[in-house]
Image (tube, rainbow over the protein chains, first blue to last red):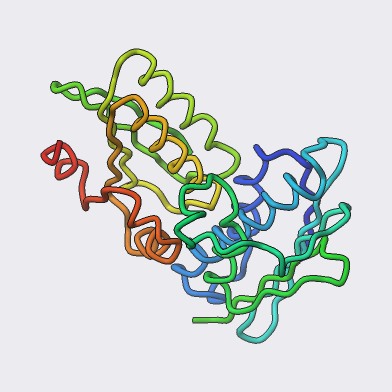
Length: 131
Length: 111
């Protein structure tokens, strides 16, 4: 499955539902789809739109879904300059707890089985294994 | 996804989040609560009993609202988190920042 999402934060919910509802039955448990996949994809897509394409409605963020044996991989790629995922502060540190932003990648890492970035840092791959 | 808003007889504002609280609709929730704050309400419950998922933007708006409400001498409580949402709050350590109850009724009784 491939999907190009206009760079509009208001589209995130619908795009997530489209992906989640088109997964073949049995790919992942209903709970992992309803919570883990939806939340992680919303995070990744929201980040791509906000930080990658700058919410420019003329630009798109591409989502592609790969289905393997007992595994789902979701790629989210924007056309931005990328970022260094290793340089993010710990959102659970007491100094950061009351910040409004900065939890997205932390949440993603805890909800999926693997997270990988492309070299440029403008593409993320989320891996969820069956269970 | 939608938000419901009602005021109970003791003046507590109860906001229901149906569906999800994510980057695309967090501003709507923020505005509803800020409008009620502007009108003089000081006690708020956000009821997540019909919420499927919350992303970090949703968590962030709750942090921001909690701060604003406290600055006005008010209080915000969260209610109705399912097991997955409770886990989300625990792993982000936001369960230490918010008063969380199992139901909106328990939150009301705690005011």
